[in-house]
Length: 241
Length: 97
Image: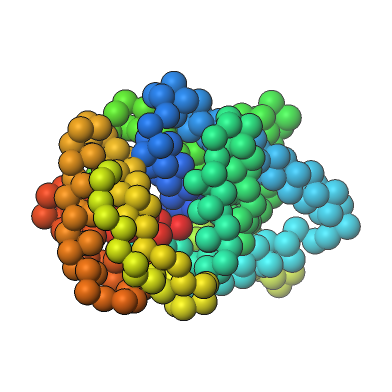
């Protein structure tokens, strides 16, 4: 895999990660309650920026930790086996996203168990300090780990094949792209846009976002299976004939 | 908010939590917050919340018991007519996550 292919796969993985919506939902809720409680615009910006910083910090930590773990594990593990497992994960999660990422009801209610969603919602409402908002950002990434694990794993496997300087660039690229929706919503809220308009847009386009996220996982899985599993196997068989 | 407090019990969502006495101030605060969340001016938010409370109190006046879902539905229905954007947030705030 050359450098361009590697960075493209990292970017595509980050785009898939960006299409998952829990952090954006929590940011919307946090902003809505902060404005509704008549807190100042500076306080609103402080909380939303701290939340985004929390998401950024946790994303970078998880990506780096998984990359390190993969680097250690691959010294004893066949890369082909690792790619087969990863592709299986991508196909499975792609189907899962299509089937149940959003609940079949009004609004943007996600797959989360209702008790957990209520807890996160209550914590979001109770958030008044920037430190709490930072922690909330961290917990939003952990809560969505079930779905973001696959794109992060793909990015990690690709990252360990790059040179150290490009690894840092790859991590920055992944974090920037995966945080893009959050940064856009953060910017819209900061510039005075109405939360109701943002939420209405998200609700109207939730099926499209769900299709893109699931489709992205399946397409990425198919490409990686052909490129990393099928092609080397066929080539090796052809050489042995 | 100056309203007479009717003695009405509110059955909470799903009937799992204990019932509580209907409190118009709580309804007023939630509608007021929803209006402020869509960046309405404070005066407009207060007027909308007063109007919604009046309609809800009239609606449940003769009832000994109502559900919190009914209160929410009636309040959202009236708010929809006077402030649709706030009504959208008011109705959907439990369906964001």
